[in-house]
Picture 1 (cartoon, rainbow, N blue to C red):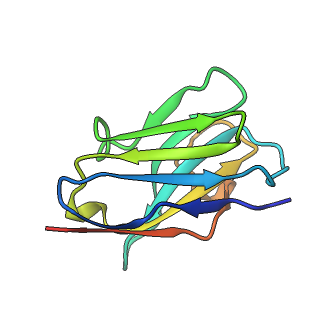
Picture 2: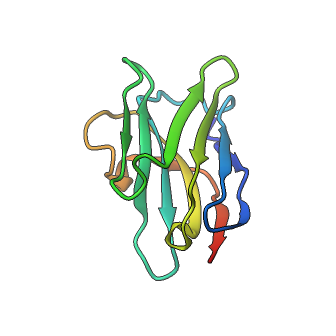
Length: 124
């Protein structure tokens, strides 16, 4: 009932691109918001992007990734994506897929259920 499975992480050079995927077809809890968070060593987990699932599909981004990252969702296949372009070394982190039954502040990590994470490493 609670599976969020990320894939697509890896190592790239600065300026490169990666596309993360999160399969959630077996995640049966009510979901209002889906998001991507990341956590770098020694830092708190931070919200990267979110998408509203039950209403108009509004998207939200952290200022640090606006214009470079795009969150999207395949409703039929139940896959969440994060297209990451123009990657920078400071984007290096473990990226987590997250799902929440709540609306409101999408950056509030405590309201989410989590995947296992996938490592993204960007070298200069």
